[in-house]
Image (cartoon, rainbow, N blue to C red; front, side, top):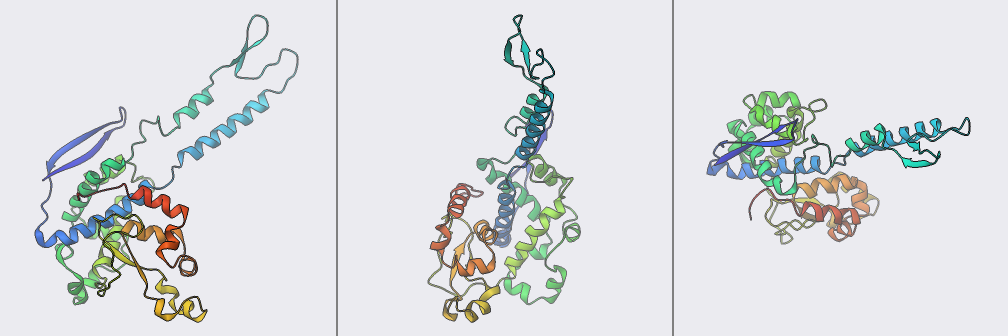
Length: 317
């Protein structure tokens, strides 16, 4: 298996690919690898779905330029003219002349910024596989193959990986992590070294991974779906989402929002959609307004999310 390291030449905005042998994942580790890959993909999707901040800065620049133009265009005589225009021999304006401000505004446009390199949807599969494979290979051996029963039966294992993990924990857990992983994440603007390091990025990923290992298998249920009930992807791992969040079960019954028999109603969601639902609404709002799949997908914001995330892939069918 070949690994592809993603690097970038900042001056030319050219991406280079370094081909080398990738670590091998054994058969007994494969289930945990896929689980880790899904947790990582969820974090990457959250990053690339964050709204751009550059257009906001460009708007401020335009506002300041407009203010300067308004101030400078105050007339003190017949020969006064608005900055940004020039006169012909008859004294008539020839129209606006490009200014440095306009050029500056143009360079802040993300579409023409050579350094603004992001993950394209069709590259997400290869990129996620590379980051997941390299990072998983650096995990402690006991995390690569353990399951729920191993984790619960070992107090030592639970004490070794206290949740939630922090950036400091990642340095201890992944001392041999390849530096090229951080470089690749920075190349695609997943990481901004001035705001967040690789340790802070991986901490919630590994926390979600270990939480998944520590979660008991769901009881057999005739309601289990074969595909995510929001984005409809059928090739991805699913987990159950309590449509009435457990944190408000007692309140929901006490205040008459729901019957006790309805508290265990679940929806089967992929990791990305599961996290999106909890960002979309708080526990009480989910319990009172969005306690069925139909109510969730009836919202325009949820439908837009499902359409977008449903096009993303990071493994073959």
